[in-house]
Length: 270
Ligand code: OAD
Image (cartoon, rainbow, N blue to C red):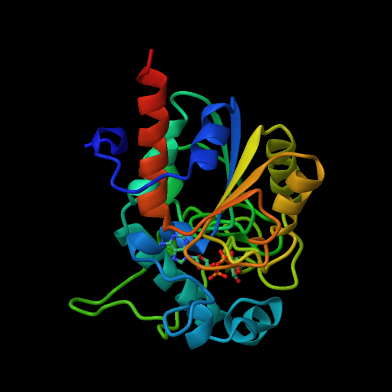
């Protein structure tokens, strides 16, 4: 069933439906909350967030990599395994459907591939990808089977699994996860595409991010400064909430299908 076939059980705020309906170019900025209903943990939520269980300095930083690369490589293999097992949720699917009637540029902080598997083209993965390991020295993409988690019969992958990273076929340096770690700059090309997408948009949807991590959190501010309306979709208040043009306290997998259904229903009206 497509999201638009479902009855719109969720009330879509009028301002949200109107802004998106009248926009030809929509930029969508997504964070970990986008994939929450696919079963992938966010980072900062109490009890369930990854940074409640793991110290980012010890697992997601250049220092962590130089101190214990097997721990870091194993942790990202575990996360890749979790992401591979997850399916896109109704929110991901709704965004792919939205692109059939207007231009939709997705800029994500997420390192999973659920937007792509739902059928969307992603303009920028600001924080990299779980599925793009590369040589730490020469940058050659790593395509070997070690990128798959190797699990012994009956053994569940775990975040504590230590796995030695493979070596680059060109220069024999270590292969590292294709993730932007704390303290590293964002890829210049991805950032350029993200800024361009936001500044070209008629409206910006910000879905499922705490808006705490810069420079990604700068993008909605850029839009607002340029006079572009920003809609926040998040069940919780964030630092963006009081500046956003409209805030909608709802989850990605409930709000986005309802929004697309409302727009499609409006388009069908004479
Ligand atoms: P956070 O964990 O900081 O925030 C997740 C947000 O999603 C919170 O504001 C939640 O209220 C919201 N949320 C939870 N469930 C939701 C749902 N079902 N639908 C919509 N929203 C929901 O995650 P990010 O903002 O993505 O970086 O974190 C930004 C970056 O910090 C990540 O990319 C990661 C992390 O450190 C790196 O690893 C480089």
